[in-house]
Image: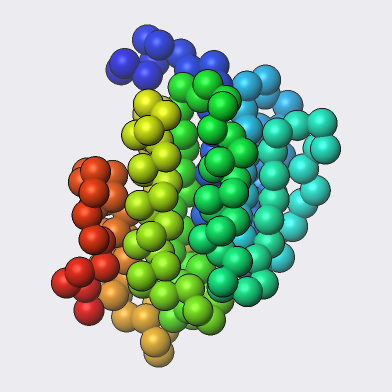
Length: 169
């Protein structure tokens, strides 16, 4: 209700699903005040953001570039006065996801990603709404491990400073 009353005018959509967020971008690209930072590991649903907008698309091919890209994109937006961060917290970049996974994006990398995102939002006093998205079960990722990955997002949202990878399978 508070969100409805305050009517945010500057919204950051941080899309961390493995697949590009072209569908989301097509819906929001012409809405003033909405910026999409899309960090993907798969070219499915590839699109080209308008060069005159602040929206970005990074398609990561090497796991070692993933966290630095998340940090770089958040840092680039640090001076923008966002009212709301909407985060698509996809687990399908995880190396064990049956669809979309990138070798080297481990549970520890996902935990650090969540820490970066929610830490950034706290430092910049930006409210956050998130979706638990992506992550496909298969031979290497069972349902229990996928649930544990989603818990990383919830823990990061609820705990200002925690070692999120502790105690996971």
